[in-house]
Amino acid sequence: MTVGGAESALFWIAGPLAVAGALALLFARKAVHAAVGMATAMIVLGIFYIAQQAEFLGVIQIFVYSGAVMMLFLFVIMLIGVDSSDSLVETIRGQRWAGLLLAAGLAAITIAGIGKAAFGTPRGLAEANKDGNVSGAARLIFGDYVWAFEATSALLITAALGAMLLAHRERLTPKATQADWSRERIRSGENVAGLPAPGVYARHNAVDTPALLPDGSPAELSISRVLRARGQVGTTGALTQVTQEIEHEVGDESDEQATTRKDDDA
Image 1 (cartoon, helix red, strand yellow):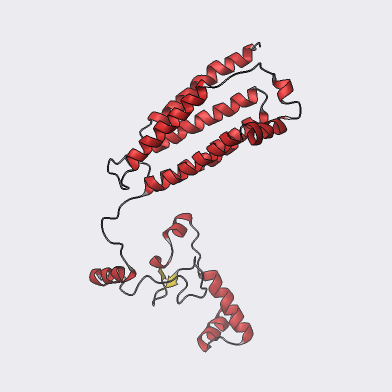
Image 2: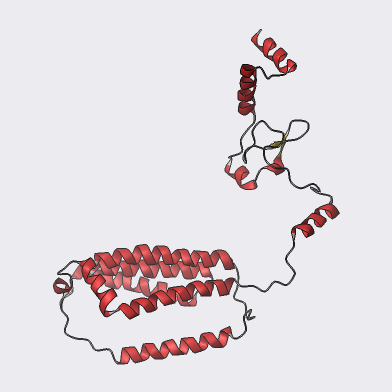
């Protein structure tokens, strides 16, 4: 089997990147750096598959592992926090010894499998892809290596459970109830009656329409800070004009509104 110059150059350039990404996944202190290292390793492996004429595996490697599995890592990061450090306090008793036992068992099974591995005569890509790359990959995944495929699925489920364990924290104080929050507001004297709901005393009862205070000014506390940050807070000016026009058409406007309208027309 001969390897071309371009393929050799690709291997010597991208190979160290994949190894560096894998080492970053193992030894990075922050979850963000570990996730970036994993994404680098997965993308480089996908490039290797494509270079070996396994286009389907390469695309799946990039989309599934660098996409879906990375979303799992981001989910873990959102749960445990970006700057959170590893805690040496076990929140679940026995999890450290159980993890060591499972790791030792996995290492023993892996070593035994590698020791019994036998490599036959290479068949070549032409024979492997004679029915198409997708059909050949499906025959291997759901035929010869179906148990390895199921074991990989079990590892992904284990990773999801591990994310739940990492996010588990023992509560030091009892959870505050609605009555506790109400008592706290009364003691502090702020928002004793609760926050105003959007649209109260306004012409339009929508979540982006601020409530109006007795003097007609908008109540800032009635609008979510997310909508304010996005600049999606609505105004009551245009809605008020439309409402006045509708009241004029149906004859439901007050005397003051009718007088104002006559003065504007004049």
